[in-house]
Length: 306
Image 1 (cartoon, helix red, strand yellow):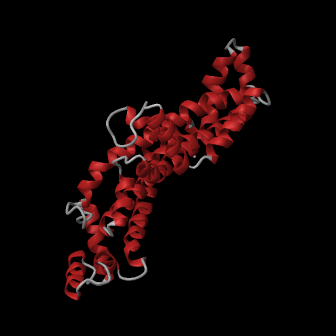
Image 2 (image 1 turned 90 degrees about the horizontal axis):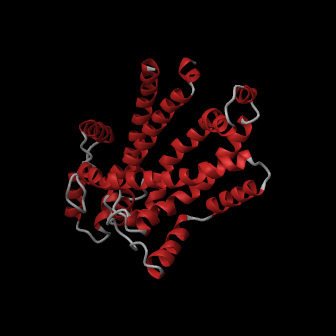
Image 3 (image 1 turned 180 degrees about the vertical axis):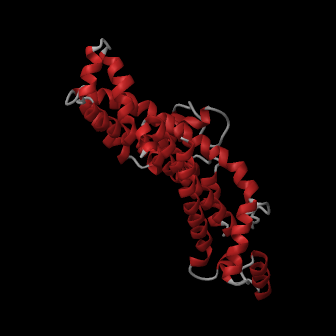
C-alpha cells in the first residue's frame, strides 16, 4: 500500500505543477492590459506603471513565473488588491466554508442516491425502478441557479423555516446543500442502480446465499461493495465539481466561501485573488483524484497489485 501511495503521489506532483503553470498563465492570456482593467481606462499613466511594478508585471515573463512558483512553494500568493491582505490568508478563511458546503451537498446526494439506487437495482423494472429513473432525470435537469431561488422563495420566505442567506448555523446550510446536491443525487442514483444491477447476476452471490446469508446481507455486504468502485469514481470527481458548482450556489445564498470570493474578485478586478481562488479549486481536484485512487486500492486490493 505504501508503494502504491508513493507511486500515485509521484504522478500527482507533475500534474499539480502543470495546474499551477496554467493558473499563472491566466493573467497573461486575458485580452488587454489587466492593470488598465483594474484601474480603468482613465487612470493616470503613473498609477498604471506603479501598479504594474507592484504586481511584478514589468519584469520578464520567465522571471515572473519563477517568482510565482517560488511564492507558491512558500505559500505566498501575493496580496489582494481589494482587501489589502495576503491571498493565502483570505483563502484559509474562506476555504472551510466551501469544503463544508461541498461535504454537506455530498451527504445529501448519497443519502438520497444510495437507497434509491439499491431499491431500483433490486426491484428492476418495477415501480420503484421507474420512480428512481424519474427522480434521476429530474435531479440532473434542475439547474442550481433556478432551484436555489425557488427553495429560498418557498422554504425561507413563505414558510420561514430557514435563513434566506448567509452562514449562521446548521439551518443556513440546509438549502444550499440541497441546491448543490440535487443534481449529484440524480447522477449517483443512476450509477448505483446500473453498477449494482450488473453485480447482482454474479455467481458468487448465489454461493453466498447457499451458505446461509440473507438476501439483504448478500446485497449490502458483498454486491454493493464490488459495485461501489465505479460509483467511487463518480463521487471523487463530482466532489471536485461541487467546488466549481459552489461558485453559483454561494453567490445565490451569500455563502462566505471561496466561490463567492472569486466572483467578487472578478468584479473588483482583483487578479491576484482570482488566481489564488482558481488555483485552490484546481489543486483540490488533483488531491481528490489521488484520494479516490487510494480508496480504489482499499475497495479492491487487485488495483494496487497491478
